Length: 95
Image (tube, rainbow, N blue to C red; front, side, top):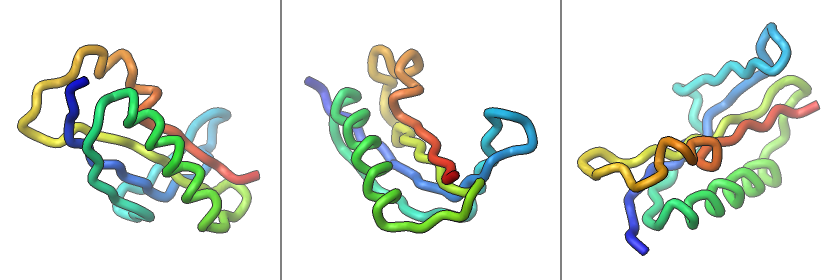
C-alpha cells in the first residue's frame, strides 16, 4: 500500500450559535504532528490522536477541539482522498 505524508493538526474549538455548528480557532494549536502512512492508517491515527487529547486535556462545557489531517504539499492525492474526508477529521465539544 502506498504511503503519503500528512500533517495532523489539533486546534481549539467551541460550540457555535446554531445547533451542530462548531467554531474552530486555527491559530490556537493544541497539537501538530507529522504522519507518514496510508489513508487507512491515517483514519486510525486520527482516532488515536482524538483519544489522547481527550485524556490529556480538561475542557469547559461548550469548548473542545477539532482534529484535521492534511496532505503535505507536492504529492498527488491518493484515490478516494476527497470521498474519505470525514475519516480524516473529527470534532470534540465537552458537555
